Picture (cartoon, rainbow over the protein chains, first blue to last red):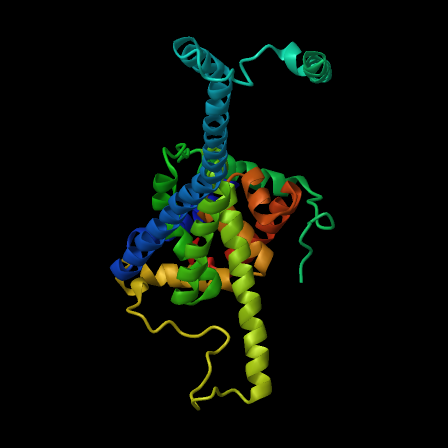
Length: 126
Length: 209
């Protein structure tokens, strides 16, 4: 029953495919151009997406690098400065003692040293 | 207008299924689709047939080119990351919707033209509902051009959904599930539309028997 009926379907499909193959060259060229444009658009879109992703990441990395660069010299300065000053003090003993290199207990007992100096002066004048 | 979900017109006889299964056996198995290697290869494979399908539906070369171009662009833009096996129903579904959009737009334009008296600003006749293609006429180059023209005329006379089912299922060779996906309806609805389309075409193309 179906064999003769399928003749219509087979012939219709054959004609349709033949018509597609024998397309006007101008139309075929425009279809090829349209395909190229479509594929190019996705490449642009990928590049755009990549740029959108990389831009914040790059900015974050730059900020992190700058922050790291800014913080590390401070630490180096604070840790290495007393050593350098101590070396200078050792070389030249006539200079007044450096405040940072001095004994910290000196500054904790400033009131005592002030009282001692005052009383010492008054006792000497007696 | 026919229902788009197709629930109301589910097939109610076994004859319809036998027609569809015979299509599977006799037509679809003769050319098993290969999975496309790339999006470029897929589009190169379908672009000419897509144009023919759009041309059959729209009856206008420029509109058909626009529809195919837009369908390609949308497929590449939104569905490139889908598995290649899914590209076929996705592409034909996009093209079908684009064709419907253009037909609706043209209908609105023809209504507006009717209100405005049928002439544009330059005094020339506005495009008719289905304007004649003034291009070189590729059909003339077909060896069986008359047969193709007869088929095209018969297909154009089909109701929209029957035409879509016939074109996707018979001409393009999609299976029932893919056709249903492309048409946005149930598989039963596809079978119904296809059966009715074939019946009409057999009546109209009696010379082909």
